[in-house]
Image (tube, rainbow, N blue to C red):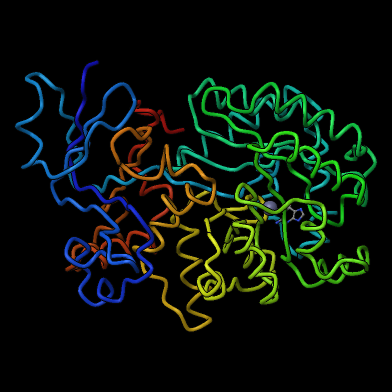
Length: 448
Ligand code: GUN
Ligand code: ZN
C-alpha cells in the first residue's frame, strides 16, 4: 500500500513521564524524558517524519534517519511552525448536554434538575439526536479530540444516532445509553428490565463494530435503584469486554445523598463495588471526595478515574487529588465533562488541571499533561494498543497544533527557549484556535 509522510516537529509518549523533575529543570525531553523505571518515556523530533500506510503508522522518527528509506515519489506533507501530537482522548463527556454548556448559577444536583434533565428530554426525538450528534462530533474534531468516552441519553435511539455518525466518520468512540430508573423526570426513566434489554441490544449491535465500543452507563448511584445497578453488573458479567462509565463522589451533597440511599454500603465506591461495577474497563468521573480506602480499592480493581477540572470548577464541585491518584497508582484520564464542563478543548482542560493542582501545591508538568491527554487517556480506556502514540501499527489519529494561532501565542512563544516552555505556553494560552489540523485514520478532517 502507498505511503504518505508528514514532516514537522513531533512529540509523543511511550509511558507516563511522572518522574520528570529533570524535564522540569532543563525542558529537554530528548535527553531527560525517562519514566520512573528509567525507560525513555517519549519521542521528540524537532524535524520529524510520521510515515503512514493505509491509515496506520508505519514509522515515526527523525527526518534525517527516515527520509532516505522512503520509496521515491512518497508524498511528503510539510507542517511548518506547528507540533504534531497524537489525537486527544476525552475520557468523560455527555453529547446530549451541548446546549447546557455555560448554564448560570447552580451546583450539581440543582444543575441536573434545572438545566440537564430538561435538555436530555429532547433526545427522544431521533432527528434532534442526529442533529446534535453532528454538532458534537464537529466540536470534538475542531478541538483535536479523536477519541472519547461518551454518555448518550436514556433513549437508545440517541446512542444509535451517535454510533451511526461516528462510524461514518471512522472515529474510535465509546458510548452508552444512560440507565436511570429513579429521582429524575418520569419521561427520562427506564426500568431495571428495559435498561438491561436496551443496553444488551445496543451492545450486540455496536460493540466491537468498526472502531466503536459500548459502555454500560448507569448515570450515578442516586438515579439507579439497587435492582438497576444489579442489572448493570449482570451486563458486565455477560459481556466482559464492554466498558462501564458512571459518576463518583463529585459533590458533597451528592455524597451525603448516596450515604442515605445506600445505608448498608460502606461509602460511595462500595455501592458500585457491591454490584460488580469495578474493573479495568471501568471509568469513574470525578472522584473528588474519596477516602484512602476508596483510592486503594480503585487501584486494586484497576479502575480508572476521569479528571474533569473545567467541570469541577464550573459547577463548584471541588479539587481533584492528583497526588492521591499517583500515591495509589490509579490510572487517570482527562475529561471535559461537557456540559458540566464549559469547554470541549483538552488544551483548556489542561489549563484548568494545572490551576487545580497549583491550588494544592503541585505544578503539573506540561509533558505529564500532554501524556494524560493522549496515551494516558488511551490507557485509561484500555486502548493504548491501538491509539495514543505513533508506535508502528497504531491507528493514525493525530493533531497539528499551531504555536502561532493567536497574536498573544505568537508573541509569547517567541520568548520561549525550551520545549517545556513552548508546550506549557501552548497549553495555557491555546484553545480550538490552536488546533490547525485534525487527522483521523490518516485522513484530514474538515474543521467546522
Ligand atoms: N452526576 C450525575 N449526572 C451527571 C452529569 O450529567 N454531569 C455531571 N457532571 N455529574 C453528574
Ligand atoms: Zn459527567
